[in-house]
Image 1 (cartoon, rainbow, N blue to C red):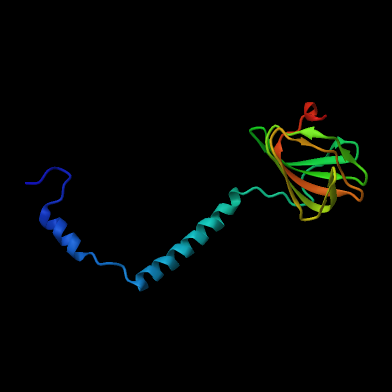
Image 2 (cartoon, rainbow, N blue to C red):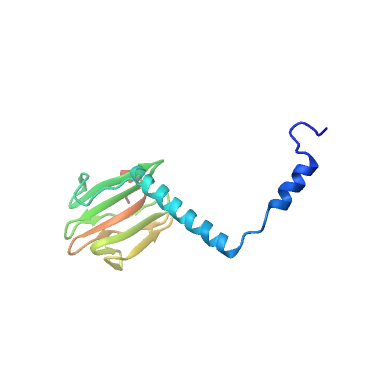
Length: 153
């Protein structure tokens, strides 16, 4: 008599003998089934995503000539858009965490840097960022610390 929960040796031998290695055809079939399953799971997951269309959400005045649209905020980190009117200035400031910026439209100037649409810019934690301006106006995407007045220089 075997231990409770343990299969008898003859059953283990029969199961082992019945197993066969997967062939390349079996691998391909499993791959197709997995791909179909993952596509269905992904399609069903879309309802849990967050999307904000360009015309949705609200812009709020941040500084003269600069508006902000918050996209997401959690744990002191914010994803947001800034819209610069021509000539607007975001004063020099420090970043309590790394900040990433993508220029969506227009041209952004950060001190001597000129960043046209499509450009990426990253500022490290505790590094002073120069004045940011735009001669023609710009929209930028930022991800970093929730902005606070005390960070301005």
